Length: 275
Image 1 (cartoon, rainbow, N blue to C red):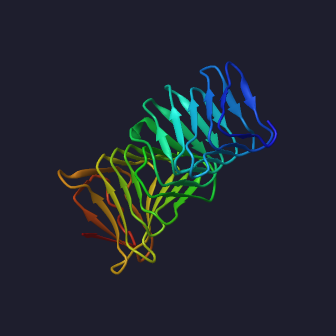
Image 2: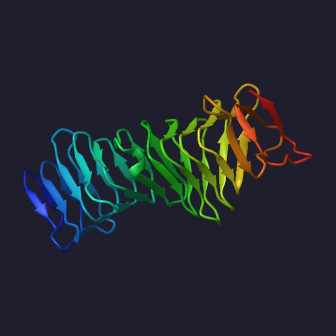
Image 3: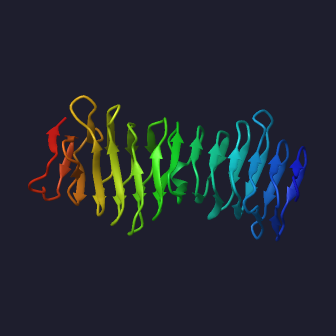
């Protein structure tokens, strides 16, 4: 497809791969990716919807493309288990139906202003360096891969499922003066870093499931004015296990409602306090 615009029509891949050499824009139609079909758009972008009219992508297999955008009033249906989107930048402002497990792998920036009803059926994997995530609504599971470096942009991040930073070699996630809340478990793998950054505003990491720190949980910035806080969600004490928190020189971390099991590092140049 060369500069294809699909409006008010139906397109079904069947058992074939739809290969695109230019942008695919679905303004009013329905694109159905059959169970044995796929869309391979290379570096070309896919846009579902025009922000006003309804349009539908039924995904039963895989989509690979450059930028993927599901606009307001558009519908993306992850119809069967195991379907995927692999893209550079990912933007979702429309309806994202996912009654079955599905994945999004983004090597670029992520912007989410509307998301799925069944959050934990989806795993968002971020793979690129120096990228941002801006999710104004709660998302499902988040994975930061080896080599990826991700920071929050303008919205606090709420993860309804699990958060995994790194795959055993590298990977980083920076709060960038914003809050992160995780309902499921948090895993920081060896070589990876989660940075709690309270430089120009307070930053709180709130968790319900256990934090397992096999890498580095770093207090990058934080003091008595702008506080860096590790906080267990309301209810019983929440567990922080694994490596001791890395507090950079002169910084302060506050603990609230947690059981802290790592051995404390003697000679630590930072400060721990109770919130």
